Length: 260
Image (cartoon, rainbow, N blue to C red; front, side):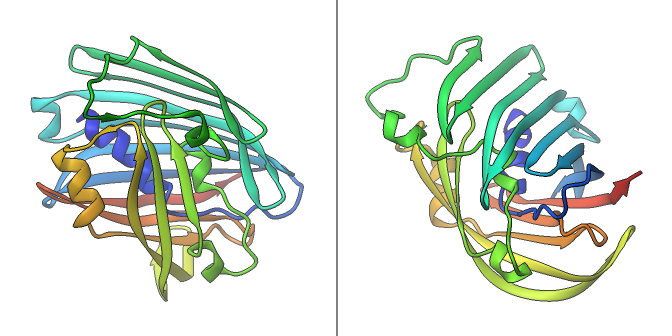
């Protein structure tokens, strides 16, 4: 289940948000994560936006049969501001427990670059087959949550970008492309939603011959559908799929609404 925990922010990073006026706005979204038709996790996110500033906090926990094999729960948070149309995170924290394993990651940013990363416990020493993360890899990047934030003039423009992410160990690019715009109806919204495809490109911080990474890079089909929240000009994911070696992971919004 630890792998599912990290899959959630990665999938969410395939979508985009657009900030509207300067008034403070708050939103809440809840998601279910399923594999082969079985619910394996649930997550929720609370977001706040005011002017150029943003703050996102989320939680995730294993559910259903997954709890029997590997109970996982954790929290994620990111805060920062926009520089033009680009998100500039200031701080990112993820903290999770999976069975007996506990892991906490804190990343601080400065000027769009990673300033400091702390993993507790420290990451294991890697061998020669490991692609190391270099200083150049940590420039002009976002964390998995702030990567979901983007300003765009049109809904189609949200897809036309490359997401550069660092989660405290792995550096990944997600190359997005526009697929379609279609009507969708769900609690809190009825209207157009856009679907983006995504190509997973590992950059650094991974084992060269890792089968799961190779599958995501060479074979996985990834798609995300997202829609605007009311009339705020903010877009958020409502549906996403990621192909893996053991089946397709599906993330579906069950609650998608503004909070007064």
